[in-house]
Length: 110
Image (cartoon, rainbow, N blue to C red; front, side, top):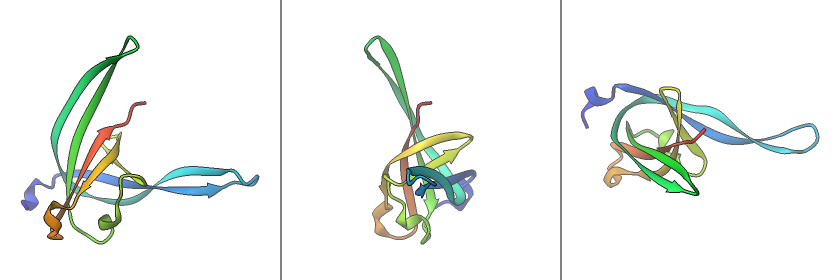
């Protein structure tokens, strides 16, 4: 792994459930871990459905392996990068060598 390529700061957020005064369960995103990553694999596509053009943007974030990031799953975590929210679609353990992790993510629509 080329350490010099880790030049983009990302923040991984985790969802937590908060119970309010009247016992409503509310999902809230909280910052979990911040680190430097290599951002690659910028791709995207357009599709049309019901007369609307839908765009998707996909990125891959490669980070150094650590115990905090080894527990990240697609269902409970997301990535913040340059003010944009990316939903993690797949966590690649990069050959299970415990050197790096790759998060494949899609830009969340607003």
